[in-house]
Length: 501
Image 1 (cartoon, rainbow, N blue to C red):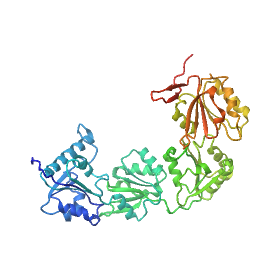
Image 2 (image 1 turned 30 degrees about the horizontal axis):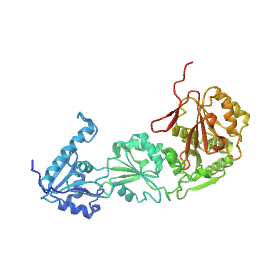
Image 3 (image 1 turned 30 degrees about the vertical axis):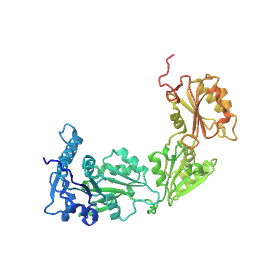
Image 4 (image 1 turned 90 degrees about the horizontal axis):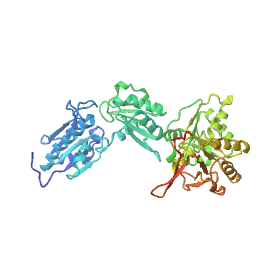
């Protein structure tokens, strides 16, 4: 063991780029020239892609440290499993490099692509950089190389790029691919079949491109759907390029997707909804909800008044008949007092029988308000709209009596508006026939929005003047409880267990 030098050597993490030696940076070449020791990872066969890229810059007087992985697949008898075996390897490899650094030698650790982008160098960096002078030299990543070899923009304007390892679970891959604009999936090889299924399930397979060994000998590119899974190596990626100005295929007939945007802005969108909105040629809906959707180049937006639901549904279906892919947006969940019913009603007419219609769920106003207040919907509950625009008040009153007498928690939608000012007071009067005055009521307004206000009041103290169309009311059952916690916050919850007597 060498004694520690008072002037330790310098550690370089050297990014070599994607494979073509001519894509190494000037600084990478300089760092190798300055080094006494050149280290690189390799498999058991001893060959190293990193060394082959930098070969012409490695001198005869360089000390070469070959860091040979103990395994290349997740099968091992190590007591700590695959990760335990790798951790021991990285500890041993970094200790070998530390000996050189302690002896005053400069060490260059070679890394394909960029050293801190899914690279093995990062394991040396985490163990050594705090102990020795260190410089990381960035390199051209395989992501940039793949986009360049495809000759297609990766992201443009406000598009979002998502980079994913193919080793993620299929459900997670599917959700993330559905939600993003552009994407690159790394580490294919054995994961290719799973990644292909995720692309198909997320509706993105037709867009997907394949790049193998970008800038290296044996490079191959093509449509991912045409690639034989048995031929895919580890050094390959799947690419979803920019959608801006992408060629839109001719369609004889499009589709209508009814999506729920949740109670407020983008934080409440599901990955599936994000994907449908990004893929749509046209966005149709009440202007307030359309304005929640991020604008995309080439996408047409059709906002309208809140009281023309049937007309809006027919307009969307007519666009689909002409081959357009249409997203009809709705607040909350589209199937709860919202646009899904209107679209399906019109879609049931014979002239639209062949138009595909899908309904994607969203976070409901009731669920959002309940989460803000605690768990008032923890047991059985009923959802009732107080609007008498589409049904007579006598029906509403009858349902309020029935639900209240069954001791259900109530979620009351559309409680009041500028033209409906008496329904809340009347509902309170009816409910007090079945509930005690102390029954907890969650008054939630603009949940998730800038004017959010959530309060818990007694049923007897519910003030109709404070309720409007942006408010939802959650009325507790006889079992609903309120608790003031140590921080002073009051929460409300309904036990899951109902008393037997």
